[in-house]
Length: 134
Image (cartoon, rainbow, N blue to C red; front, side, top):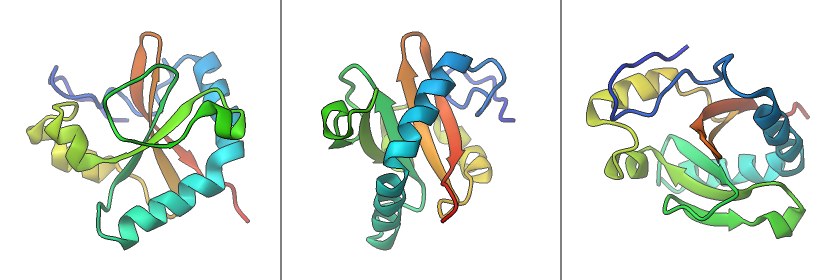
C-alpha cells in the first residue's frame, strides 16, 4: 500500500480497499475490452523513450491530462482513455517532486500491469491492473 501524507501528492493507497467496488467493477469491465490496446500503447511509450512509467488516464469527463488514445465510442467502453506518463503528472503537480521515487518504487512491472489513473465523481487515484495472460 502507498501511504503518503503530502497533500500535493496523489498516491493515496493504490488499489485501496476503500476504492468503491462499483468503480473497480466498471474499470474491470472496460479493461477486458481494451487491455491489449493499452499493453501495446505501454510498449510503444517505453520503446520510443517517452517514459518508463506509462500512465493511462480513465475519465468520463474532459480533463487536461494526457493525450486521447480512444474515446468511449471507439470500443463502447464506459471511460475515455488517455496516455500520459510520470513526467506530466509531476509537471501538473499531481505528483509532488518529493514523491517521484516513492511512485517509481511502487510502480508495477509495465509488461505485466497497466497503471491506470481513474477519475470518476469524487474518486481520483491510481490502480494497477494485471494484463490478462495469453
